[in-house]
Amino acid sequence: MDKGRFAVPAGVTDWLIAVGVAALLLGSGLSGPHPSGDRELLGSALLAAGGLALAVRRRAPLVALAVAGLSAVGYQAAGFEVLAVSYLVAVYAAVRAGHRSVTLVLTVALLAVLQLSALLSHDGPAREAVAQARSTLEIAWLIAAFSAGEAVRLAERRADEAEHTREETARRRADEERLRIARELHDSLTHQISVIKVQSEAAVHVARRRGEQVPEALLAIQEAGREASRELRATLEALRDDDTAPPPGLDHIHHLVKQFQTTRLKTTLTIDGHPHALPATVGRTAYRIVQESLTNVSRHAAATTAAVLIHYRPDTLAIRVDDNGETTQDTTQMPGLGLLGMRERVTALGGRLHTGSRSSGGFTVQAELPTDGAP
Image (tube, rainbow, N blue to C red; front, side):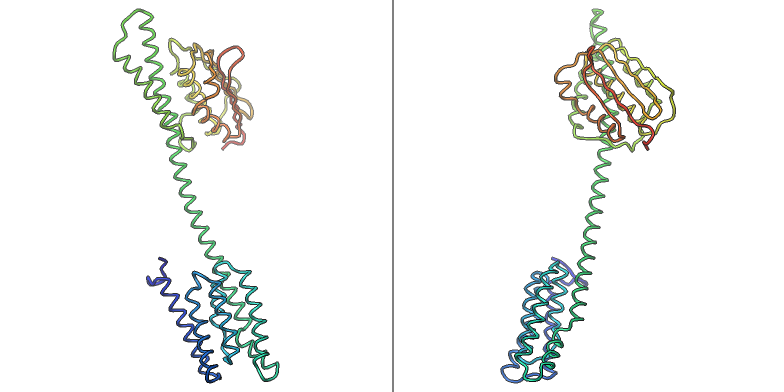
């Protein structure tokens, strides 16, 4: 339940205000000139009804507005000359709830009905009838009530939008941090596990080619590497990147390529152009592209060679990784999380990425990263 100030329930506050306004109307009406007899009783009942209608102004603002307006017409016709305070409060509540057009139409209609009612029920000159109607509902007070309701409505809407924006920002930051951690886990752990798996498979291959018995420990390492790689990719398959962490850059490319050098896979690195300082994000992205490409070569392709080319251009860094392995239909149709992560990284920098089979056999990964406008 909504609470007002001092922990008073909103419903109780509404009734207190409604009873207070009803008492004010009755006091004002009965203390001034007023009719007697049945007309006095009817007018008093309408004064009280107009005030008590405000009890529902929060739940049904238009109902409160209509009841307050009709009661104002009724007690004026009965002979009471009292400012329609209840209608002013109802106008404020209706506008605050967003019913501006309906409130404006009902108010204009009420002003016309009050004028007509005063002319029909008043026995004196028309000027006095108009003055009586004006005293029942002052235009200035109407404008003030309408403006106050609109101002509060706009303030509440801005407060709601600000709160929603804060919640969205907090949720987005939490998601970005989670994705950043997950992406780095994918990049680093997958790479390290792949190196373990490749080295163990190479050792098993060499031992079997020499006719030696493969140690059980080595076979266990090989199987554990395969299983860990599968589980890691399955666990992190929905996670993406955030480049705020500082992973290795182009300075570590030589060491990275050397790590994938095995008896089964010959890796080479060629650097063309004139090496120069690059934005940090470009260096990190280039490192991840080469890392993921070589990881895919060692894991999925029956390749014996992998060539890495880094070409420095005036405003672009070109990266190319070629292998001579066999590509299957599954490889081209289901590139996996690694290639998808590459594409996201390259696109974020405004670059281009091409992956696919080579005409001479094998698979190629080609990327162009702009270096002039990157942060």
